[in-house]
Image (cartoon, rainbow, N blue to C red):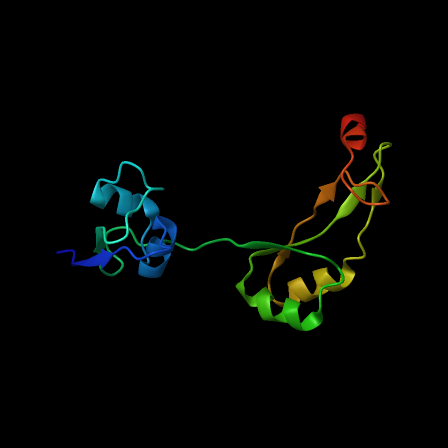
Length: 139
């Protein structure tokens, strides 16, 4: 038997936040409560939520974060344990297809120490800053 609990929607709630707090998927909430428009919850609306892991518990989540090479070490150390991937921002592509590295060696080393996989980011940025549609078109 699946136990259920009743949740009363509060100001500022979203279906996603309610699902996360209760360990169920948004799809489970939508299905169990026959919600036609998930983006329109009403304050005071009641939702039936499966209690416990049966009935739609969420699985593991893969989490990526972007970081500039200049990130403070203490900030990086605080968040790395929660990540699956770390994406140093960013390798810059030029119109000839060349790449300029971001100086991300320290980020990659820190990621590996925490069993976090580094992921490469390549962007069509001008050396002076800003994205360039000309570089993107040339590539």
